[in-house]
Image (cartoon, rainbow, N blue to C red; front, side, top):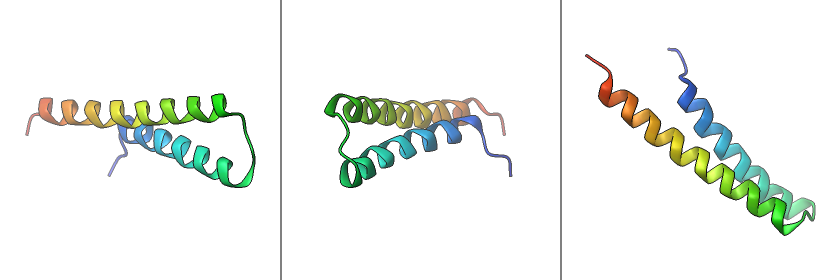
Length: 61
C-alpha cells in the first residue's frame, strides 16, 4: 500500500505539534516560536485531512 503525500503532510503537522509540546517540557523555547510551531502543525494536519477527503471523494471506484 502506497502512502499518499497528504498522509505525510498530516503526519508532518502532527510531529510539529508533538515537538512543540516536548520542547516546552524539556527545553525552554521562546513563546513566539512555540506558537508558530503549533499554528503551522495544526494547519498542516487540517489541510492534509481535508485534502485527503477531497481526493477520496473524487477517486473513481
